[in-house]
Image (cartoon, rainbow, N blue to C red; front, side, top):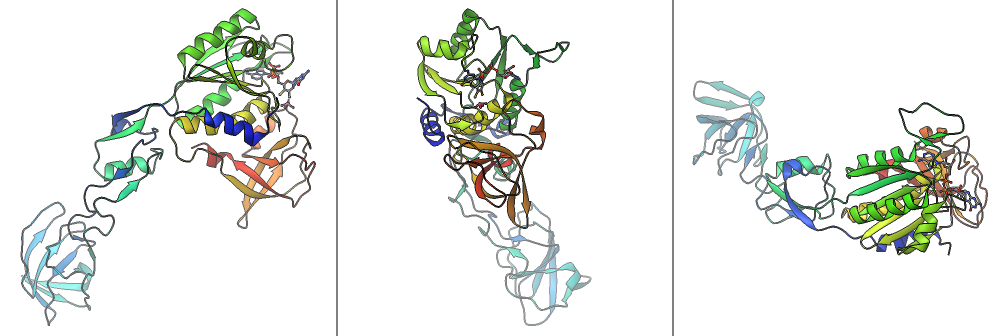
Length: 399
Ligand SMILES: Nc1nc2c(c(=O)[nH]1)N[C@H]1C(S)=C(S)[C@@H](COP(=O)(O)OP(=O)(O)OC[C@H]3O[C@@H](n4cnc5c(N)ncnc54)[C@H](O)[C@@H]3O)O[C@H]1N2
Ligand code: MOO
């Protein structure tokens, strides 16, 4: 039965299970998803520290201070300051507990062991207080966060050596179609170059998820059956391309239907790319994707992306739809949720979505200008410039 977009997505997501967690060194953790909350076990900073190069003073009535010593960052000096005493401290240096403030070098004058302060000084000036950034026991990073260019350095800042992360799924990929050529082959009239392999590989690279490409399987029932069986036993997730509509050689659909696979989804009410089949063999979820690159990509973004993000343990796995205003008329079909490939620009604080020159499923070259999909819901039909729609922005989804 043909399913609506939301229903199909829900079924697919309900079959997304995270893999067991493991402990790894922080060095190796880039691209993994945290399976634990990160809680700091100490205050940041854990001592009073100077924010400037200057003089830590214990305030007195006058503006003259006796310089007692110098403290560099990292030096832990047990020292009691008396009223009217000062120490020279560098930026980041530990300030004696009883210092009231630090005065910048530029605001002072030094003569021998004596300092004259030329500005007014308030208690706390230029001192970073204990725990002002974070208190021991506070949550710093949430479980389900991807260790990306923001989280990774913070783990080092916290001084962690090891973290708990979810194991990454292994994704297997194969394509079908005797008409496919891969790079390195001479072009032959009527053939097409394998594109879908590189669509999924580039998305998985971006998400830091390991994959293996099995190859292009011949349009032969036994070969396709063997590939589906072997690979669904080896990988956590399997993606195939092509062979799922009504053609004589559309074996993926036939085999998933006839052999011992559990069918989760068979066709969804979207365009482009309605003929999607999602099935299961034991724990492996198999995405039987349509062959046209535009249809393949749309299904990848609509169904596979939230699914694989959930499997990796990410807390924000579902789509982040944004509101867009159409900058040009857009095509749609009443019977489906139509996902227009679009160029979406931020103009005066609003997202404006422009149609590409063609929305035909068989076209793909204009994809170079596509950075999002605009959803025109079922029942709406063609829409005009100015229409308000929701859209998926690739840059928000592929992380
Ligand atoms: N009689 C019907 N015909 C079709 C229907 C239908 O309902 N009834 N559905 C159409 C729709 S919608 C789509 S989408 C396509 C899906 O077809 P398949 O998934 O079976 O894919 P193929 O037939 O194998 O290939 C379609 C097209 O894409 C090219 N292709 C395939 N793989 C790749 C690849 N890896 N890289 C680049 N291009 C690829 C292939 O050469 C074909 O041109 O079916 C409609 N037909
Ligand atoms: O759904 Mo198909 O993708 O019309 O081309």
